[in-house]
Amino acid sequence: MSKSEKLLVKFLESPVRSDLTFQDLKIVMSNFGFVMQERAGSRVAFTKEGEPPIMLHKPHPGNELKQYVVKQLQERLRSLLEQQA
Image 1 (cartoon, one colour):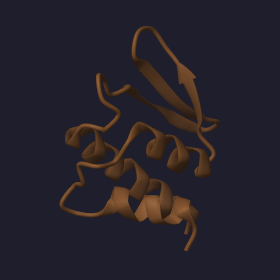
Image 2 (cartoon, helix red, strand yellow; image 1 turned 90 degrees about the vertical axis):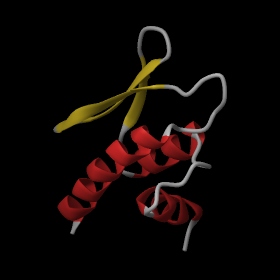
Image 3 (cartoon, one colour; image 1 turned 45 degrees about the vertical axis):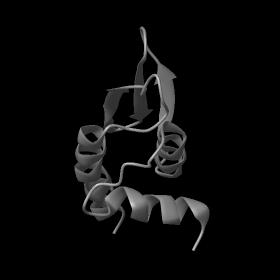
Image 4 (tube, rainbow, N blue to C red; image 1 turned 180 degrees about the horizontal axis):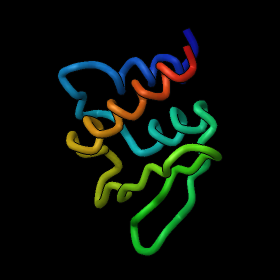
């Protein structure tokens, strides 16, 4: 299992992990074909042709993602996995 596959499993685990970082998210999203675009302030959007953008704030001052963000991402990641199947 590759590092990106292991990260995807971590993102989909329940209960939500508190050690997932923004860098981890960038790796997972790039494997789904999304490109990160910087927006105003700490906002970023992950975009992909034909998909609605995923918009969120970069975590700060630390690098760990908030649990509510991971929960929202879990729904979207599961949907993306279903589309690939």
